[in-house]
Every structure is written in C-alpha cells, then in structure tokens.
Image (tube, rainbow, N blue to C red; front, top):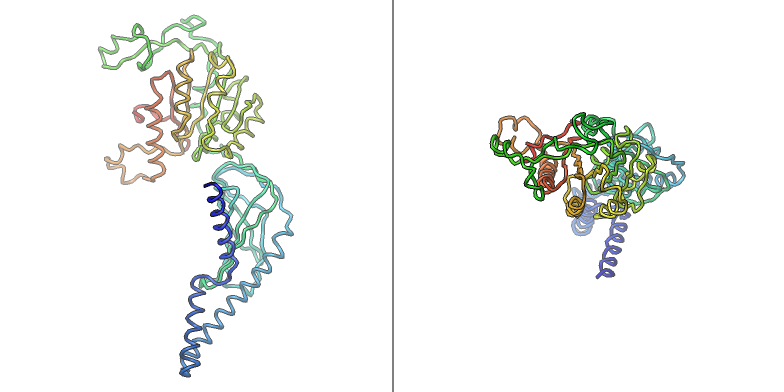
Length: 422
C-alpha cells in the first residue's frame, strides 16, 4: 500500500509539472480548438469571409499571448538562478522583503506574475513591480527555520489564454521568530513564574493550609470547607500556601501542533522577559534533550514547528528529572486536544505539587454572546469560535485533577475568566 501511494504521488507530481509547462490554459486550448474547427469546416470549406476575419483575429490574439509568455519564460530562466539571495530574518505576522526579484519587460503588459512558497509552508508570498523588476515580499504566519526555499512561479495573461507554472528550489537561509511585540501578558505570566521570594508571613516555610480552591476528584474529604458549601453550595478545599522560595527551578514544556503559534509566542515571551526564573529547564516536542540555556531554548521553539504531529515527549521530560515533583512545572499548550491531555492527567496524579497548563489563543469568542444583541456588532469568525470551544473542552477535561488550567487571550493580553470557561 505504501508503494502504491508513493507511485500515485509521483504520478500526480509529474502530471502537475507537465500541465504547468503546457503553454495553453484550459480556456486557451478550448479557443484554439474552436478556431481550428471554424477554419477547417467553414472558412476552408465554405469560404465564409466573416468567419475568416474572426479566425485570423483569434489566431493573432493567441500568437501575441504566446509570444509574450515565451519572453517572460526566457527572462525567468535567465534570471532566477543568478541571484545572490541574502538570509531572511523576520518575525511572524510581519511583512518583509526577501531580496528575490524577477525581470519584466515593458512590451509584455498583459502578463501577470504570481508566486507562492511550497516549502516552508504557511508563508504568503507576493510580488510588487518596481520599474522593470518584480520584488518578492512575504508574510509569515508560522515560525520556521530552513536552509532552502521551494517556490512556484505562475505566469498568465490577462485573458487567461496562456499560462506557465514552474517549481524551483534555491538555497536561502530562513529564520522566522515568534512575534512578541504585540503581547501584553506580562502580568498574567507573573502568576506562573517565581513569585515572591518568601512565603506568607502567617505560614510556615513549607506552607500552611490557608488557601482554597474547587474540590476535585482525589482531594481529601477532611479538607472540605463545609461552611463555604453551606453559603454558596460550592465544594471548596483548603490547599497549602505556595512557598515559592522552596521551588526555585522551573520546568517548562511547549507542545507543538497546527495552531501552536500563540503558545509559542507566549513561551518565547516568558524566556525573553525571564519569567521562568533564573533556573529553568525547557523542552519542546521534537526534542529529546532539554536545555537550560535561553538561546538554545529559543531555537527549540522555532524548530518545534517541524516536529511531527503528534510528537508527545511530555511524559519523558517530566519523568527523567526527580526535581520536577517539587518544582514549578508549566505546560504551554495550544487549543488543540491530543495525546498530551492523557499524559498531563497521568503526570498530575503522581505529583506532590499541582501542574500548570497555560493555553494560549489569538482571540476568545464567548458562545453566550450569540444570544445577546452585542453579537450583531462583534466579529464571529469560525476560527475564533472553534478555538474558544476547544479551550473550554480542555479546561473541563483537566480542571479538578490537581492541574491549574488557565487560558490566555494573546490579542488582549489577559487571562480568560474561569466563569466564561465553565
């Protein structure tokens, strides 16, 4: 079956290449056949003068379009390999020039050029004309690190009669970092960093039971606050005050996935601002060896976009080091359920300290607003609604299992209230 699928893939790629180099488009091929039929059966057979003029006009139109396309193809092949391409460095959601350009002559006005990146993916490429050259600029939607760029050039005329498509690969270093310029979650991330240097003044160094949270499966019954239950009918339990000074090391893990860019930006920001503390251990999907260096951790965030999905190294990361049981452990997760959910639940059962899961999204849309008059004035994009619902599903699946779950709205830089997630 694998060999058959591979053969089908090769055949499909070959057909795409052949169709790309055929100069006539579907419309151009149809018009050519119509012109030939009129000439063969009416002009040559019946000497129809009106159809003769029509066939000559169509023939000239096709010939001019083909000639312009031929000039464009020759210019492309003579120019694209001789360019000195500089390394590309930029940030996600930012437009920048790539130094790739093509020549275009003034006597080919009906030609249209377009370009797209086949590898790396999730990068939108466009061309802008300046005098007799076309300059490429791109918008990266995802972090990436690559040494080669595979592009596809597409040339067509305004009428859509002729076309040309060609794939080519050029050596060019590409480094796209997460964009953290718009992030405003400094205060939100401080909740998960090192915190105060000392414990609560009324508590012992190991932490007294002076805090409370919702009751969850596995919590001791003798810690239930029955007076609180009598007032508001909510089961609350006493929890130890977090003596952060005894947990100086932070273990952080980034889960990769198709929609992990907000969580990658959050992890990058935490490293950049030192919110993980002076001593930290960091790892991501696709990397078996963790790091304690900020520079290496940032590189791991970028290269995690190439990790296979799913690539769940979460359990091995928290199981190899015994210090994770008494340290501050944070999981930067995308709003995508996966095998990591079951792993997080399994890890939380064997820990003496709660596990923290921080879900990052790029826009929260509360479904309850659909029934309110404000919903008519708010953006109701399907993407935002889908990731909002998935964030709620993850929150419901993890809460109450010795896991602190919070959702960060990356665009507003705030934590989503738990009342909107229940």
